[in-house]
Image (cartoon, helix red, strand yellow):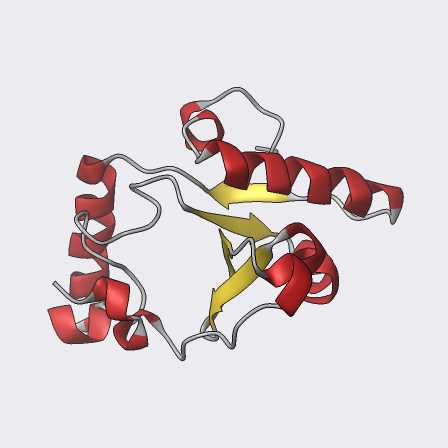
Length: 139
């Protein structure tokens, strides 16, 4: 799906995030780069399912937490995060995302972007190593 599709995963994103994504995608298209939304807004139920799957894959809640947040802490559930692909799009965002306030949040997830309005003037803050280093993820 694209940032222009009228589906829940896109439409339920925070309006400011969605606006920034659409502006960035339009500029990227001028550079021959297309954005795909691999994951946007998620229901709490779906987030819980992803967490259960990650626990099964990684062997523990602690290991899974490096990749999947709880429904209570996930910025996807609140509509404040989006996973973008393909690699050309994330490379474009690495170079140009701050101009739109779009910043990579986690080093281990180069596809995960959140809105940081101050980045337009100040650049993106350094990404956390993974979600376990993000104070917002602590319950």
